[in-house]
Length: 209
Image (cartoon, rainbow, N blue to C red; front, top):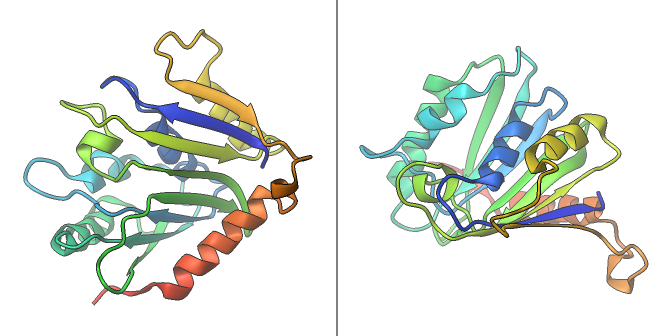
């Protein structure tokens, strides 16, 4: 996993982070995923489960989806998100396990998509699962998110290539790069670092009461 893209969101109509995460969740090859956010917006003004997750189509290829939240004050919203997943998504497609971190101060935004136990795509950044950060409707947040993907995996590489496109980045919002494998700090592969990050998160997470 040596390919990297930085998404510097600066306009309402473009949300590459959201597109990348949802594209991965729709891929049959991605059979498990970890999705962490401080906020999962479910209220009268916006439902993330209805707006985004209801459109997931995996043709009954099962996805083990683990979500981790929430920041203090958003317990009810996270609970409603869990109910929304059960209501909007095919149970044959998504097996959802909602977790939280004790203390209710969880604010990390992490996505790791795996195929047969190995990460093939991941995103870490500043975007919560809210209308302003994860959609392209009215108002938006200026965000910075980093996408990693396995360029040797044909499926995910094709999806990311389509997402990035080949046109000039006129909005000056995307940077594409490669991990410098010769640098000492990269002696441990990105995929191993992501698996360790996932282990640390899950070791601390508890079931939602």
